[in-house]
Length: 445
Ligand code: CMC
Image (cartoon, protein in one colour):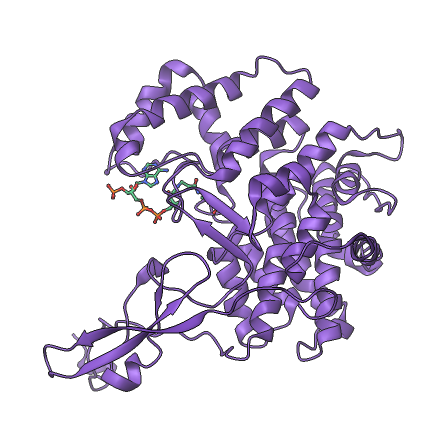
């Protein structure tokens, strides 16, 4: 994002190195430049492939494809490293807070004391939602999944904030970004309150981002709500851990939606839809369901066996990751936070935590998981913490969406400001019918 601080980053350099592609069928050959990142694997620039050899690439699931240049987040999946703008996630979780992390992701640098005060003040002034938006909630069934509600109301923001939908205006982009980050906790808490049949709680701007969210989620007008500093710290840390994660499914969805010039509210709603799936943000909900289904340590071997059986669709939820082939660094922080939260709540022998730890121990010593480098991911422990805090499982992915909004917004801004930005338009390997003539209905067999 423009303004405030200029990121001190190194642009991806086109080195003189290249790879040569020999086409055995035509004898043609093509030199493709190798791009050098600041960190991580070199990247083959295939932009000239189609014009040079008249071919497309084929990479379902984008397992070997870099879709964009980015300066925001770096993951080394083999070593279990996650950096936001160069800073290790463990250090941010330990020493920073979510607002500072949000500034870092958006602007590329940690804020000075003044920048921090100004940023928090600016976000805080946008925490309320247009009063008419509350009528949207009332249109949903009380038992609607809160992610369904979030898809709807976040997309609907573009119908309310017309003054921040012109993506060619940097000031409008900035205000839309701040509005999204500021209003997500308010809208998420409203989705929760609506499901409970309780009145909406207005934000209180003297509170921190995490405190404010906990209060909007759990306070009732009839009683005073006391915010636990331990729970607020845990909530803030969970937000930090989920704030960004490079070009994952939902972030790529936001970028793809935004590449056509769609407004930011619509793009973030698309990201929420993608996040909802159980292979992505929905996994924390699925982990808890799985742990309850297992129910007893004695049944762990039965479920491990099922997870390994290729004829059984069951997978160990909260295990495995497309990029991490080592312990997810976020899972380690999450495990520690889990203990702190349970201690604060006086839960010393939580059977579900004990079951999760035993499942982790057994899986990590099993050849199937060792060979495939399947380790616990961020979702493995987060559900236990959120449940202990009082959130129902259906809210887990909503909390993920609150935090990830910062990453989505940062990535969306980066895309819009990229001079090489084009509409995202992949090609395909067509394996359908060849061209054929239309057959009138009376001649069809
Ligand atoms: N349980 C059992 N087997 C697994 C699991 C699992 N959780 N995850 C992967 N495998 C096996 C898979 O069957 C395959 O085996 P084989 O090589 O014999 O065919 C091998 O490991 C590689 O798996 P993959 O499906 O090719 O890997 P992927 O990169 O396409 O999938 C994943 C990554 C996260 C979707 C997958 O590991 C999974 O479904 N995990 C459970 C869901 C989950 O926890 N998701 C949260 C991800 S982290 C949060 C986020 O990013 O949103």
